[in-house]
Each structure stands twice: as C-alpha cells, then as structure tokens.
Image (cartoon, rainbow, N blue to C red; front, side, top):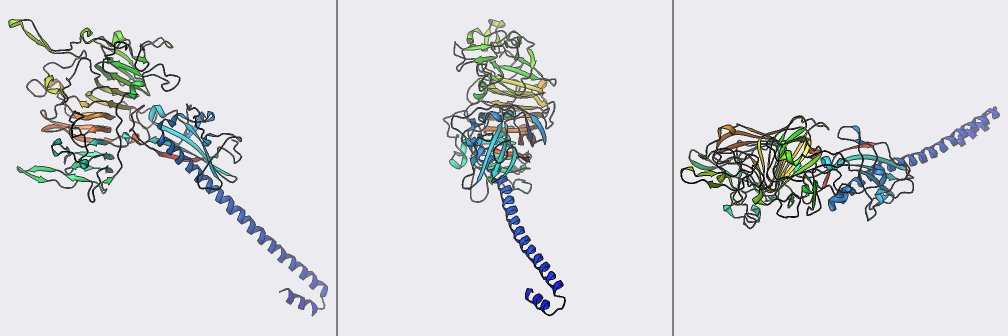
Length: 608
C-alpha cells in the first residue's frame, strides 16, 4: 500500500499534499499497530487477573475442605482458632442476616498457618499449587447450642482475594428420621450372638423386625444392618451398610387368608435404596453428665446444666418452665470426676437454677426455668459413698419404697408395691411383667430413670443413665426455623420407652388409654432401643406420631398384636442444627449446610 501511495505521489503535480497524506496515513497505521500491541498486552493482563480472581475463590473452597478434614481427624478442633476470629459480626447464610456471636477459641499447640491474621500473619498454601493460599477464622459460638460452626475463609492468588462464609454441621444421628445399628430385637445381653449384623452371620433366631405395609417413614433412613421390609412407604432416601449385588434389603412375609406369602416391594417414591458407610454409635452418654460440672466453667463447660439423681419426673410447660420431682437429688451440679463436691445454689446469683433439693423431694416438685441451650442429666444413685449425691438404699427418702413386701399378718396381710418416689408403678399396674429381658426391675427405686412429658418452650437435651419413659404427649410450643423455635433431645443410655401400662389382668389401664401418641424430639438410645411398653398385649393404639429423628442400637418394637402404627416425620430443622449438646457418632464428618460469598476480608498483602 505504501508503494502504491509513493507511485501516486511521483505522478502527481500536487506533491506537497500527497506527501502530507502519506505521512498521515503512516501515522494512523503506526497507531493501529501500537494499539493492537497494547490491546494484546492488556488482554493478557486481564486474562491473568481473571485467572487469579477465579483461583482465589477456589483457594477459599480449599480452605473449607481442609478445615473439614481437620475436624474429621480431631473433633476437638472446634475449640481452636486465632484471637481475631472472635469477630462479633458475621454473615450467617442460614438466614441471610448478620448475627452476633462471640467465638470461644484458643491457639492449638501445633501451629496452623491458616490461623494467620494481618499483614505479618501466615497463609496456608493449597497443596499442589504454585501461588494459591488461604486463611480462615472460626466462629464456634453456636457449637454447644446447636452443633454448628461458622467459618470465614479468604483465598488468595496473586493480587486477588475472595472470601466466603460457610455454615458447617456435624453429620450425625439427626441427619435421619430413622437410624439403627442392628435390625433385630434387643437381647439385653452383651454376650449374645445377636450382637452381629445380619450380613456378619447373625443367627436366624434373633428375631428380625420388619417395616409393615401401614408404616410411613417421611425422612431419610439409614441402617448399618439388613432391613426387612414389607411394602412400607419411604418418602426420602434409604441407605444401608448391607451391600449385596442386587437389592439392599430383604422382603418380609405377611399372612393372607391364613397363608404366609411374600410381601411386595416397598414404596420408594421413585428413589432406590443405596449403600452407605457404617455409622458408629458412641459407647455411652456419659459426656452429657460432664455438662453439669461447675469446675470446668473456664474451659469445657462455660455454663453448667442440671444433674438429677434417681428416678426423676420432668413436666415441660409452654411458658419456658418445667416442674421437676427428684427425691434422691442432693446436688444439682457437681465438681470432679468422680464427683467429690456438689452444689445446688449458684453463688453468683444466689438462686437454685435447677431447683431447691427440698422442693425436688416434695410432692409438688420444683418449678424452674428450662436450662435453655443446655443439658439435663439423670443419673442412677451413686454407690460411691464419697459422691455428693450418695444415699444408701436402706435410707431411701420418703415416699420411696424400694422393694415390694408383705406387711401385717392373717387377714390383715397386705402386699405393698414398691414406689420409686414419683408415682410409679401406678395403681393396679402389672409392673412385674414390664421388667425388660435384662432382668432389671421396672421402676427400680434408685435407677437413673427419666419420666418426661409436656410442651417444651426452649432448647434442651435431656439424658438418662438408665431408661427414658415418655409418659404422655411431648411436643414443642413453637417449631419455627429461627432462634425462637424449640428443640428437644432425648438421650437414653438404655431404652427410650413410650410408656403404655397395663392392668393386672393385662388390659389397658383406663386412665392411661390414650389413642395416638405425639413425640417431637431427636431420640437416641445409645445401648438399646426405642420401643413401646407392652406392645404385644394392648390392642390397636393408633399412630405413634414422631416429629424429629430416632436413632437406636437395636430395632425397637412398637406394635405386635396391637400397639402403634409408625407415623415418623423428619424435622427439617435438623438439616442445619441439632438440639444443644446432642451426642454425635463416635466418628463423624462435617458437612457444609450453607455458604455465601462476601466482600474480601483480607487484601493480598494480608491486611484487613
């Protein structure tokens, strides 16, 4: 083109004008070349910036995953963080609002570079990367209350940083509306060969329990064992550790016209039963007793809960209070392990937060506030004479009568039933037939048994060293999915029992013959089962309407020649929260329930 222009200049009389034109065009071409080079370099810079910007978000995600792996390896890691992670305002994705909460963290002995803050602070490097880093801050202020953590993570690549906030919740029993370790009747004998999963060769005589055609289970289900199903309906995902080559359950049988026939397939609402890994039950619920110690307020137990001793009755009221009767209780909070000191009067407030022992022994009981966001533990009367709650069996407080016996003689001879001090067994109850197979007496006068009912207004977990009896409907005052919603955990070391007494003639006791039963709670039987008392002699009792979750070592029977039809519905609030201090599996992981990106917390140089 330049040569053509030069030829045009040579053949023209207006050579001056032509020269100016050539120079102008050359200048334009030069600017185009320069602009093209500049645009190309700018595009390279923008591409690099975009790559760093995207990489910073990936680095933040890597930080969340790394923190999850630390929690899985060491559940106590929830206590660690840096001093500046005690930020008082943070984004909570679960309700898209800022929440205030003071994180209670300490620096771990083994340094974690991700806990760095400020320009001089450290960053953790994403494994396998050249220049991707992250640091995080942990807010554990809600961990003891609802089992959740909030982590704020900043990722850095080059000169770009991006920050996210994630809510983490421990994967546990409240993930399921129904969980069992063993799908068989409880032998109450640790030496029994029935302490095996079916796929491990459990003997056939152990009594597998099946899901019946009328059962409706509305929530996720998991069993470590082989489930036997007879046409029951499952509305959400079902998983099992039983892992054959085709189906993940066994068909039960039913009686039709006097003949035993195979059951049809379960109703799975378009889903399929899947394999899932083993979930390990904790050995005991004793960690919840620790929550009543007042000597650990500076470390593990900032606010002690309530300890009651011997058979205890709790009636929840819809105004945030509860009425407690506990005749054996001397101290409602303890110090030491084993306990060597106790108190009921809080010296800081000069009040009895868990009840005055004198009132706890009275027929009216003590009315106290529900220990909100806390735990209650009912223990068996200690046999250790140095324990502050020790009382010899022979020195039972009135009106306790530890053993039934004959009094009088001749025509005046009368059999006096035992009395556990809070009204059990009731009049005309066939209590002797209600002893579990272990031989432990029902309603033993010193057992750590809890008898519970009412309408819960608050968030609390109640645990018992022995049995938990749900003696009437047990429900929430509010089920809203916010801080005003109520939550209840029931954790029995032994069985959790739906109280259902029969008369001495094995008929329903008229005063207690309610039809249908409502229980709203997260239920866990650590060593035994969730079951209905006298399930085999009482006839049809309607539906057992559970809103929450059920977890148990052995499959509990709720109906046999009568009893209750299962109507179990998952409490969807358990997706991102749990009752306070509720027990988790022996080994667990933490899942992200919600996350949101926020404005970057740190600059690339590490400063805020």
